[in-house]
Image (cartoon, rainbow, N blue to C red; front, side, top):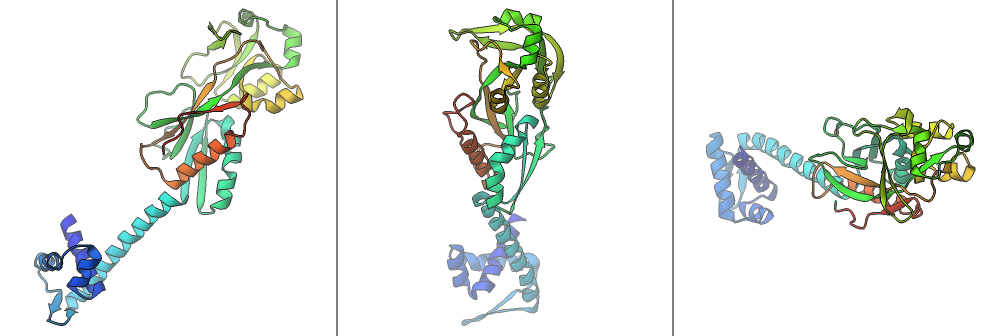
Length: 312
C-alpha cells in the first residue's frame, strides 16, 4: 500500500511538472527512477495512464481521471503537513489542561495574555484536586503538586511553592496559640485529603532539622479541595496548611495569621506532565512559558523556580 501511494504521488508530480525530468528535480531523484515508478503504477492498475512521445506527455482518459484522485491525495498530505507545522510553530487548536481547582485562578491570570494574542487557541481546563485520568480526558498538559505516583507521563519540574501553617485570629483567641509542634495535638485541623496518602505534617525546626508531626491533631474537617480548606481556616474552624501564594491578601488583611512562625514547612514541588518526551506543540510550550513567566514575578517568600528548567 505504501509503495502504491508513493507511485501515485510520483505520477501526480509528473503531470504537475509536465515531464519526467521536471518531476525528478522536484522530487530530488533521477528521471529513470521516476519513469520506473510510473511504469510500475501502470502495471499495477492495468491501465495506460500516460502517452509518451519524444516531445511531450499526454494523459489518457483513464489517466486524467486517475490523476484527479492522485492530486487530491497529494494536496491532502500537504494540508496535513501544514497543519502539523502550524501546531508546532503557532498555538492553535484546543489545549486541554488539568490542575488543582485552587490553582485555576493562577492559570487564568497566566494564560490570559497568550489567549488574547492567539485567537485560534482554545483552552479547556479540568480543575480538579483529585487526579484526573489524563489519557481518558485527552489531556495535553497536567500540573501536579507534591509527590507523583508512578506514571508513563513525562514529568518536569516547574519549581516549588512555599507552604505555611495558618489560623484565623478568632480561632487562636478561643483555643490558644501553639508555641511548639507538640501543641498541635490540642488543636483542630482543617486537612487536605485527596485519598492518596494519610494526612500528615512535616515541619522544619528553626535550625532546619526535619521533624515529623504525626496526625494526632484533631482533623475535624477535611476535604479534597484546597480552596475549601482555606475557606474553613479563614472561618475560624482550625489550623490549616495553606499555600503562600493563596494567603498574600488574607495575611495582609488579617483574616489569617501564621502559626508556629519559627518553624517552616518543606516547599511543595510543582511538575508539568506531558504525554511524551520530545518536541511538544507550540500550544504546550507557550502555555508553560506563560505560566513560568507569571510565577517568576512572585516573591521568593511565595515561589522558587526550578533550576533545571523545562525541555519541551
